[in-house]
Amino acid sequence: MVYKNIKTYKKGYLNVGDGHLIYYELSGNQKGKPVLFVHGGPGGGFSEKDKRFFNPKLFNIITFDQRGSGKSKPFASIKNNTTHKLVEDIRKLIYFLDIKKTYLFGGSWGSTLCLVYAIKYPETVKAMVLRGIFLGTKKENDYFICDAKSSFPKVWEEMINLVPNRFRKNVIGYYLKMMKSKNKETSNKYKLAWATYEFSVSKLIYDKNKVREILKEVNFESFSIIELHYLSNNCFIPKKYILDNVKKINKIPLAIVHGRYDKICDPYMAYLLHKKIKNSKLYYTLAGHSASDKGNEDVLVNEINKFGKGI
Image (tube, rainbow, N blue to C red; front, side, top):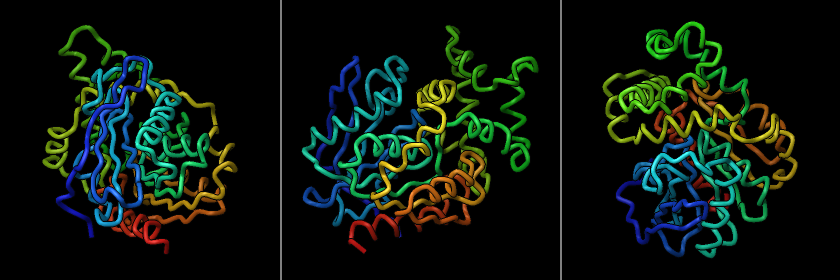
């Protein structure tokens, strides 16, 4: 069961420095248990649909757009936009809202950012529900680029055909270069192509019409360029940084949800993380990458409700 018609009681902008203003909204129960939704991408921004996981009577729901994403300003900016900066933005937002401890809820890139944040500020995290684990490694980038070929061959071909043969050893780098083109038509062509590829392979069942609907709702201009800005820089974190530092978050309760047929984030990473964190539960679901796949959605709602009710 998901929740609908959740009312926002406060919204605004927080100046986090470096010329960036991040947009945030507070919804649900003002006196409820705080839960921070950390969106994916990077660059995806949040939507009203992202609030559906949370019981509005139980939770004080915090949603925000990361630097350059959604309604945050400046739009689609990759300047002063790194993982470390985003971690500090979360800390500033929580401090600004006078919250001592919060639940963290994030998927895909959102899982990465939640983990890196929790490693640095474990004292501010009550528990975490993470989906589609991504640890920010080059190996995972390769999985994203290569593994979908067997399950979504036509979609994969459409993506790769925009890359000349001599550049196919660095698909991400080539796409990013084209997105940065001063020719707006070229830039938008590659931004749209990348977003189309990602959303096409994200669900268990491919539906071209649903992909078109998603692309109308998502700011693909910011989503694509910010995502590849991060992926081309190994997410601005050292190799194996998360797994090497999970001892700092061993006491934080963690529910891991990962679609067994996820073609964007390697399901094996969820297992590696689970093995490293004693206080974690792992759920492999009959789903793909998307949080809206039924197999993922049901478990996500159930797990955050368990934490909220102290079960």
